[in-house]
Length: 349
Image (cartoon, rainbow, N blue to C red):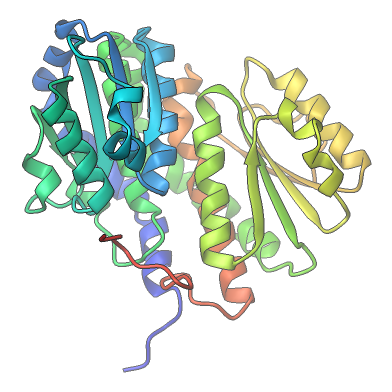
C-alpha cells in the first residue's frame, strides 16, 4: 500500500485538542502527588530532555520559576549525564524533571542515573509510554499516552507534555485561574485550526521564502526554539530562534525579502516586540505574529488567540498553527514530514 506523505503528522497536529483534553484528565488524577512535591522545599528544579524536550525544558523551567517562584532552569540531558557536578552539589535537595516522549532516550535515562547516583534529590518524570524505562524511574511519574505519535518530529507529544509542565507550575503556584482555564484550550485550538489552516497552507507553500526566524521572550523563548526546530526538521530550511531584542544584535543582517520572521507576542512586552518587528519589516522581512489582541501590529499574517482572562493559560496555542505551517512547507518541497531526513524517533547510544 502506498504511503501518503505526511499522513501521520497531519493527524497528530489536528488531534491536539483531543490529546490535550485526555492529558488534562490524567494530570488532574495526579494532582495530589504533584502538589505534594512542592512541600519538599527544593533548592532548585532542573528540567531536562533532548531535542524537542530540551526546548520543552527551557519552557517548563520558565513556567515554574515565573509562576511559582521556584529557582528553575532547563538543561540538555547530556549535560547532566556527563557533568552533574557542575549543576548539583552534595547535600542539596534538588528536583530533576526528566521529559521524554519515548521514555527510552539514552541520554535522558543516563542523566537520571547520574542524578540518583549523586544523591542530589528527587526525580519527577513526564513521558508518553507507560511500559518504557522512564515511566517508572521517578519518585513521581506522569505518563500522558495521548501524546504518543507515529511521526519522527514531535507535534502532539510536545504540546501534551508541555501542557503537563504548565499544569505543574500552576498547581505549585496555586493559580486556580490558570487551572480552571486549561480545559478551554481544546475548543480554542479547534477554532484556531479551522480559522487559520488555509493561511498556514498558503504561507507554508510559498517557496519564495528561504529563511525563517522565530522570536519569543520569557515564557515563549523555549516555544520559539521548538517551532524553529520543527521548521528545520520537517522542511530542511534555514531556521533559527532568538529573543526579540537579541535579534537586533547581528542576526538581523540576514533579513531580506525572502525572510519570514514569526513573533510570539506577549501582552507584557508587546510594544517593544512590535517595534522590533517593524524594524525588520522595513528591512524587507515578511511578518507573522501569533498571540492575543493583534489588531495594532503591522504584519502580513496574523494568528490571533480567542479572548481569555489570563494569557498564561493560552501558551500551548502558540504551537499548532506553526507546526501546520512547517507541515505544508515540507509537502511543498516534496518531502515527507513523517520521516525527516537523517532522524529517528528515539536516539539510542
